[in-house]
Image (cartoon, rainbow, N blue to C red; front, side):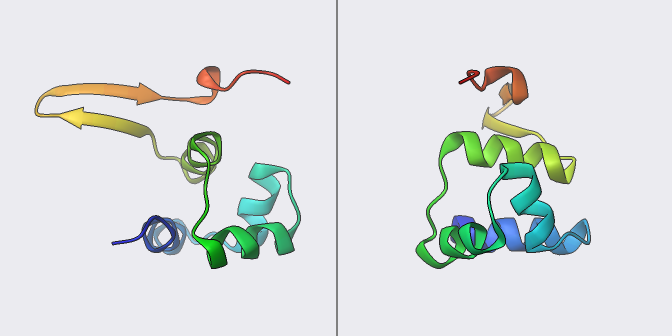
Length: 76
């Protein structure tokens, strides 16, 4: 399953729209549509989207988890 499809499913589960994601990513609605069209998301985007939707982004290997959150994003 593609990244964009997984994000769309998460958005449906949390009743969020593209405009909500645009606000979280601090980009325009058109920018969000472009990311979905190209299926092009940076790691920072995924962390922000997960946070916006109330999820955690993680690498999971059995019982071992490495959680990514907003503190992992470098300030510009």
